[in-house]
Image 1 (cartoon, one colour):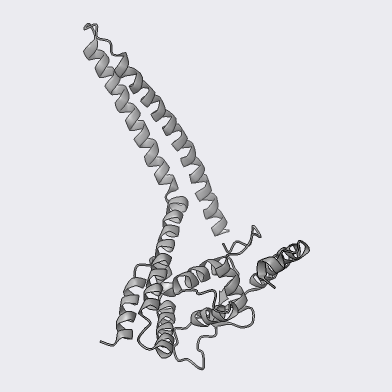
Image 2 (image 1 turned 180 degrees about the vertical axis):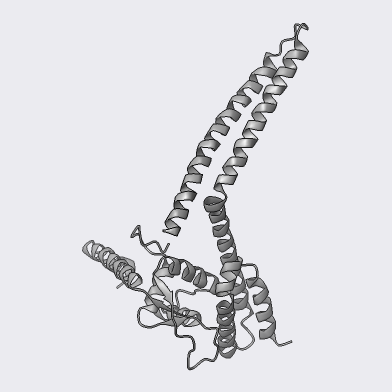
Amino acid sequence: MDGQARYRRWYRRLLGLYPRPYRERFADSMEQTFTDICRERAETEGRGHGGFILWIFIETFAGIVRERATDLARLTMARNATNVFRIVKYLALAAGGLMVAGIATVMVLARGTGEDITGVVAPALLFTLLSVVAAIVAAVLQGASHRRGRKAGDDLAG
Amino acid sequence: MASTKSGGPLTPAVLHILLALSTQERHGYGIMKQVESDSRGKVRMGPGTLYGSIRRMSEAGLIRESDKKIDPNLDDERRVYYGITALGQQTLAAELQRYRQVVAVAHERSLLPKVVGI
């Protein structure tokens, strides 16, 4: 197979790793640019341009990582922040509830035995307190995120 | 970044792309070649950086896709041409003015001969 055609096929596959909206908008142009670069290098340097092609692949891969990271950040910040905070809130409440149930169980089991359960109950109470604080913070952030999302939606519609 | 709201410095990639588009509309490969030429070969921009910058600059309103699609010397309809917007021109002018002020300060302090080796 022709070397350039092979490079081009590999590059097309690499471009498939970009997020879909980016790929749909730029993949054809990028592939065309890559073809132009290959053609120019082949004309000026003959076959000895493998290092440059490798650099293009690495540079493009770095671009893919950047775009993926941007997408992920956007997804988390703009669309899923409310859900993330909601999940954190429920997880914190569940952890706090489990701790309370655990403390109650230990207290019932220890009743009448005269065993000192302070060493177990104190850290559990502290964890429960932290869980409640985490749940409250998550609830506040969830509300703020929800309001931000609604405002952004209104701005977009307006 | 290509932020225009903050008025902060532009990244080298954004500055060079704006410079490349300041004289005429160009497609991706044309921008790469012009950047290489403008920087005397010192700035080498790959497709990953170029098109990532184009996306962000496009979102920031600094550049736009042109209606012109085919380079008469080249024969591929997939080439997309980009042009600088009025906001892009203002941003470029502001950035060049910032550079000019920096150079003026350096000149006042007689730093240029030492730094640049003139």
